[in-house]
Length: 503
Image 1 (cartoon, helix red, strand yellow):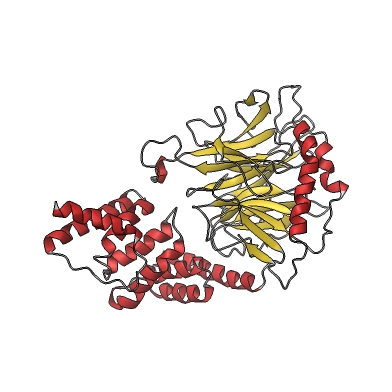
Image 2: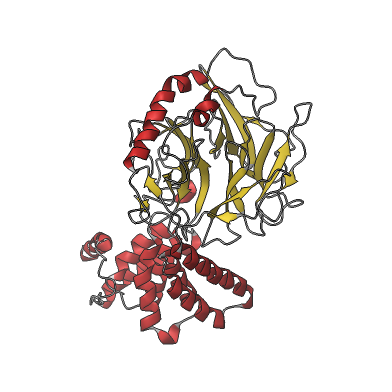
């Protein structure tokens, strides 16, 4: 009975570990300590065999009060936080600092590297560089390139933090939309009343919801409740979601046609009175034997930009390609957009401005400050794309920032970020861009797109009497009022005031 009470006490102590640096080992008899080591063993199994750092943390932290001065346990807890899906990665700092400070004779190169990563995520770039360089001395030769890239990312981070973009407000969509899991790739209709996004959640799981391998990607929908809040999201029904992973990719202006991802291919679905149609694959010049993950289309519906890891055409990993619709209405062969946009690292989450001349995307290459950063490139009159430009801080962070979607008025954007202060692995944020160069008014050209006739990305779309523009036409005035509220709310923002506010 004593042993079971001990286990209960250990598990209850998980939530009371805020005294990391001041903790001391609790004295237990040798027989009782065997149960503490069993907790560590369970954590090891979950972390190393099943790659479940969040589950492993529960057991490691349960043992920590009794083994707080153990080198291996501090190292494991620090590593778990760095790999965690649901916890802040910077929570690794006190444990990894203890590893470095208390066990100088036991250190490996990865101890310095991991502490560098923790400082990197905490945006303490100078400290991160120090420990990255310390890890460089004894690191395996195959790992030196990775360390060099991390140092370069920190140098980029220092540059962007010193010169942040002005008049930008980033707001988390809140717990009604975001969860402790990954919520990403937001798609919003023209008047920002409907939100579609991808999430890994456990609504349909009766087993352990924290085991991330058991979670499927599904497409969720939320209706805007008021000026600030969104309704509780619900998964779209079959046939959009099924037993496979289904993920949002892009949506047209009126929200009537969605491109989605499933099993390595891009598919398209349309709305009818009965709901969303069964998704159909895009043609073979778009979908290949490789993986296609993201896409967007211009307003004239004749140029499609998409992401693929086509080994024959890629510069490395995932690249951005272009396909043009020919005179017969068929999509042409993919064209790689070239080294101004693509790198030897992954590019992802491609999106396009209304005029079709600015491409937004995420990349792990170029001058990223860590993970994926959001970039933009502009096209000249000859069709050439400019060198990718990092959108800088506060939009980008050392975490993954991806799936940027600019709204048609150029003042609002939505994207996914794993930045500090979120609710889970990735959260969805709304960006308000208060640019002094733009007048605080709504011009007719900003909303004229609502009435443009459109073609479809799908070649053989069924005819329908359903008018998906009707709701947008009815809500245009509300959307204009909503935008004016935002501009009025921040009209007095100056460079001296809270120009880069993150909520």
